[in-house]
Length: 216
Image (tube, rainbow, N blue to C red):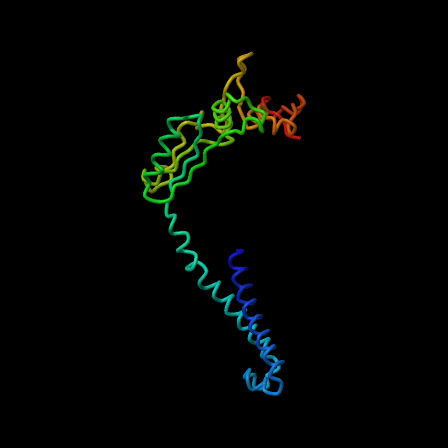
């Protein structure tokens, strides 16, 4: 949307600049201004010129916008995309190599913590990456168009736990009770999120599986 708006605004700006130059010429030439400008006595010449500039810009955007954008988007084609982390080091390195060998554009998202800023121990980088992956905060996936044209062929979710469920089902180490591991469980382990969360009252657990934390 904004490129189209800016394109129309630019056309009007250039038209306005030209009309200002014409006005300056009229002031400088005095009696000869009308002959120089070729207005032929049209008192609405400036407005009609700018109106036609506006009309032309709008029509150009409507008719040629998609054709004009095509060269900018066609360069990416079907890009290789990988969301990986040190939680699965072999997959991280393989995705990097596959992306570098890919014939077109490759995008990488590699999650990592900033230990001091996030209140995480210096030795916890891999553990935090595994935790946010398992919590579905940053799912691990690879989209490789070389695998096939269909989404089911190119999209690979291997590496995420319980991919057939909405949430990873695990157990508390202390009690053995099963629960859904969600983003709130991971967020509680990092200092930047702790002040946004607090333990939900027991009555709020009903209907939520009894194993979540409420954000306030």
